[in-house]
Image (cartoon, rainbow, N blue to C red; front, side, top):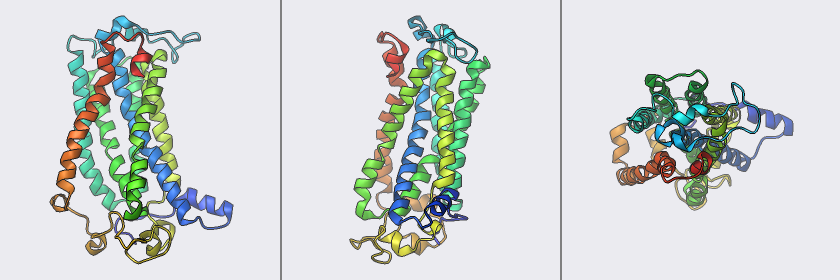
Length: 338
């Protein structure tokens, strides 16, 4: 059994597909399911995360003069023109509105970074399918709760702060979980191609989140949060039903896992290389790697530093580029968001 497969069993959706086909799914089919589900899962994380940067343009009073367009059908309680956005939205409509929005971002990213550390430890001890599902459903709930502030007429800074803190905590479960699952199914032989294509989920999620949030702004900024929240929760349920966390969890042997599905080699892939994330793992047995031990692994420290600076630039654009563009005089909210 894989050292991290604590309580992992065959997903009910996989059992259903095998009963329908009356045969066991192949290793390649399982790999396809893993890549597809983890890709969509992490794209939905980024779609939910991107919403905040889009909605800033209607929450902040400095952009209120640009106005919002009316919906194409009669307005109602749930589908209404964002008239309130024309004057901003308290507590973000004060002279320090930009600072307040920044505090929300700092709160989210701070708890997200701390949560990543604990999520990694939880992933070593819990069923990754359940952990990932809990993170996605929790993210969906608290992302939607931010949007509910629109209809419930909530103007408390501490409400939005608490919601963002909890959303960041649940979001932190995403990256450690999907990387661990993909690492169990693919060896080093295909790492470059697979990880290169698979990592497009970040950009796809950001694009999808931007398009959805900007398209829904004219019906009320609350929808820009609720829609991505519902999407990520639904994807989370699909993960619970269909995601196999490792070859062993679906009854496939270690030879298949290490050989990338061709049954060749034991502990190595077809090129004689050790599998992704698998080298010292077997020697370590069931013991999880500690924080200091992880830093002593060759390549971890320089990779972490490179990622720190690349993320610094990426998140600056992710959270503030639409807001900056809003001050350049773009004609409407949807154009600014796009």
